[in-house]
Structure formats: C-alpha cells, structure tokens
Length: 82
Image 1 (cartoon, one colour):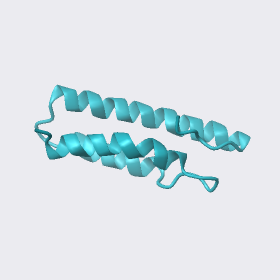
Image 2 (tube, helix red, strand yellow):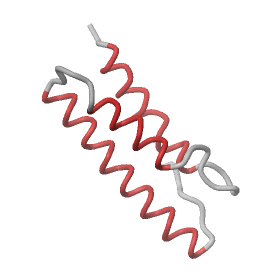
Image 3 (tube, one colour):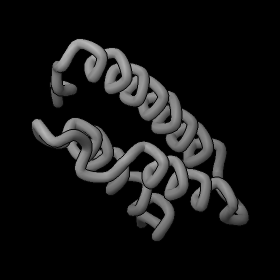
Image 4 (spheres, one colour):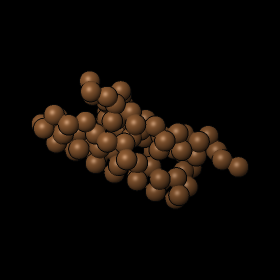
C-alpha cells in the first residue's frame, strides 16, 4: 500500500519535468516551487530510505532542469520533456 508520501513523490516525479519545460513563456511553475515541495517532504518524519533516495533523485533532476533552463534561456531554447 502506498503512503501519502509515496503518492506525493510519485506525483512530483510525474509533473515536475513537464512543468519546468513549460512553453515559450517559460516554466509553468518555477524551480523554487518544486524545491519547496521537495523540502517539505524531507521535513516529514519517518521517511524510509527509499523515500529519501527518491526525493534526492528529484532534487538532482531539479538541479539539472534549472541548469538547462539557465543555459537555454541564454540561447533562446525551451527545455525538452524527453
């Protein structure tokens, strides 16, 4: 049975990249929003090692997406969702 935290992690994993990719106007929600959501999960008590690893992976992905966005905005290119 998935816990609420597991469901939240799965949700963030599904939507974060697409939201950061956004459209020509930029991200739908900024990286700061996603970082805050992930840190709220980290503040939860009794996280399992698997949950901690999943959140860590998402934080690393967010770092990559923000770096891509900074690089691409300098070149006028949108982030891909692939």
